[in-house]
Image 1 (tube, helix red, strand yellow):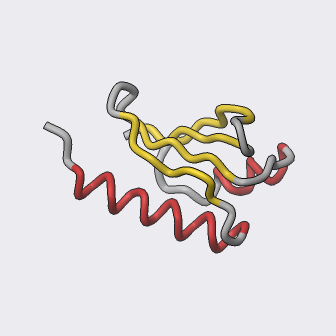
Image 2 (tube, rainbow, N blue to C red):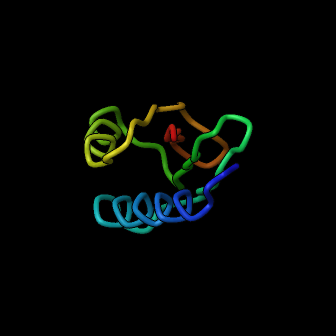
Length: 78
């Protein structure tokens, strides 16, 4: 069974960190049930240094997924 309280709490933490580090630039932040991961897409593309700096702020494992339709994409594994 999926624990949506944990997912929502994690999404709130991700949103808070992104807003603190980059400002409000979230295009999409959603849970992908098939991948059992939270997916984040920004409204802009980040340079490698910016991506690394952002990833280092998160308390859970995350991967850079490249560039999506709007900007840089990340996956957070639960």
